[in-house]
Figure 1 (cartoon, protein in one colour):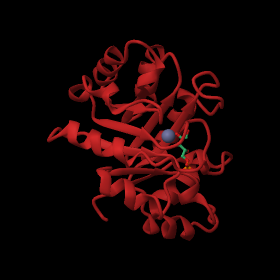
Figure 2: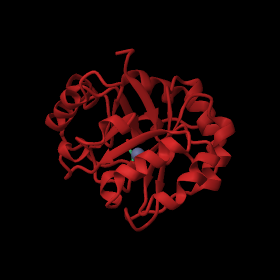
Figure 3: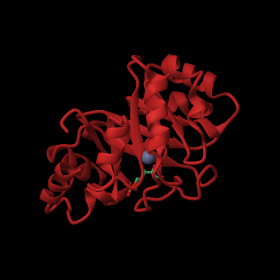
Figure 4: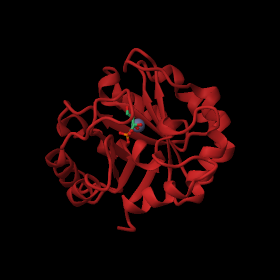
Amino acid sequence: DRSIKIAPSILSADFADFGREIRAVEDQGADWVHVDVMDGHFVPNLTFGPPAVKAFRPHVKTVMDVHLMIAPVDPYIDAFAEAGADILTAHVEAGPHIHRTLQAIRGAGMKAGVALNPGTPADAVAHLLDLTDLVCVMTVNPGFGGQKFIDLTDKIRTLRAMIGDRPVHIEIDGGVTPDTAPLVARAGADVLVAGSGVFKGGSVADPAPYGENIRAI
Ligand code: DX5
Ligand code: ZN
């Protein structure tokens, strides 16, 4: 379905070659580039911070979609704005003041996303939808690429109905493959993050599999 955007997660790219990986995956048809920021505290893994995101920026010609799996969020919002994030997504579970956080993200000139862990119900964002450009439904427990998809199509359907005619994306993150993508798209998702599902089988030297994987999703 051409109205579905694919956002490859560079968590599954070659960490020694991010610039070329980003350019390769965009050349192969990526709509957005998804950047997973992990703090070793909110999630049990560490990735990269604002200086790395800033270094990615000149390579991203599409949309840099930055997913924060960190707590707290607020002290870092300005740094990610300065690093050039287009969309900055914070988890609803990351602290008691997600409403303030979303206002601050928009205030810093970025689009604001809110992410839900698999165990968090759709209702958690009911009072945030006018402050939000994107709701990210995690279909794995965040922290690692390559995990098995958790079927949350009922939550996706509930969110799509709650959103109504607001211009809010529903993004799915975790375990997206050609088998699971149709389920979530039918339920109302319009942005699909895929890490292992896009980068498997290819490399910067041989990026054609990235394109085949993107088209298969
Ligand atoms: C998980 C990250 C995801 C992850 C997806 O914590 O937020 O973006 O990279 O990887 P796959 O597509 O391999 O499940
Ligand atoms: Zn992510």
